Image 1 (tube, rainbow, N blue to C red):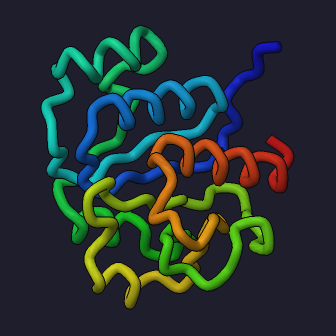
Image 2 (cartoon, rainbow, N blue to C red):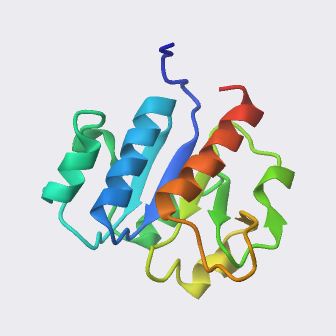
Length: 156
């Protein structure tokens, strides 16, 4: 079943992504589920990378991705809007959180997450519960899990 992307849709934001295949997979997920994708530069790869293009295919054009030159640009654009940081350091489980239309779900770098000052600036910090002996899920998997819950709660 195909749907039009809602006007006030969920926003996935990636902080300086490292791995082209993950970013491309996230772009496909956003395109298929009607979410927006935003990237805070710099990326750890070129968007012309073969690995990126192979996974993203024709699901999303680069022009459909919103880019921020840095975190200052990102936070300035988000004044008055909700940012939800998905982090292994979060105390609240994502399913216990009330998502709203237009939320920005922010995910850190695969290699190092987000800088500590992000944790200080962002009120809502959520986690996906995992087995204690494991460090983290794949970034694309984390985005998919969280976006699905956001869409379920907001009716999109």
